[in-house]
Length: 442
Image 1 (tube, helix red, strand yellow):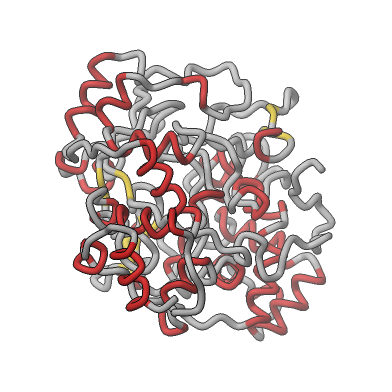
Image 2 (cartoon, helix red, strand yellow):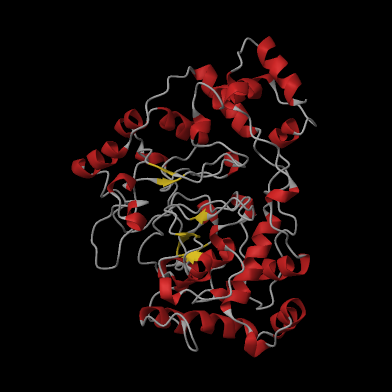
């Protein structure tokens, strides 16, 4: 159905020109993506699924970002090193328990290779910045390595350094020890140690020689991260959802989805933040999402807060503001919110319509968390902390009927791409290290 025909249908369904006036996004085109070399993506696929990059050789990128789980992990807060299993079946390894949960929900990976994605992570702590060395702004500043091909490549430097995610406890591996000692770059630094591990595996040495024309002793962490970024950009490009076909005049949407689209781009106001081709403004907004887990702070801090964008900018107006996620394949990517506080999409949508009211009636039992001997609700048990979260919310409530909410959900379902969640290369049966490839229990 072409856009002109769509307007006629909306009018026939009793809707006005709101969606047209607010503007539907243009269809995604090839120009929206950076090119990817197939051989580079194929190398990145193996590295993405290989636990060789983690301190204890037990956690891969795919442990927390698996296609079977919407490129997330199906948990409210991830469990990296010290866990066993995958997704909601993941449990604590009694012989190597983690110190705490990973502080924030594992974000989906769809369309991160698109050119307009210039800021990453829930707090935007890494972004393109032409005024900085190597064109990137990161918390590491002078320790930032030269050689990352893209922002997507540079973001891989963080999980491998986090003891909660991939590095492990400080005394358990040479990588964790290097992180503890502050040795990140240069010979013997954490990134170099990872690169040396990979270079010692003949199959990887051969592939790096073929893809990049470098010998094993020349393999750097940036080469590893560039390959992983190429894989992610290729594997989870998502532009063949029903909504994409609709925008291209090559497919129809159901009446419910059309009415939901009218609400999304009209009176519900969703597109104020979730506009554009990928349904995100790439901005930061305080939406009153309940907080749980260890919070986000320095090692010397004892609070359990997550101040969001404020930790990056230091601006009071950024307190409790988090990056607007893209809504591509959103029906597959729960739990939702920076803390994974909402298990279902409909619950999250309802909460977003009136964040302050949602905080008052929040049901803690809906979180998806492996059992751990930790205090998950320190913030929500503190009235002053909850009041601070509420004070940061500036959006006005939106009143929708149950039928309208159902229509809005029908539109969000139309953003589900049948190809991208499965992936183009898929999950490899084996990886060159011979370690176990993360996969859900069948």
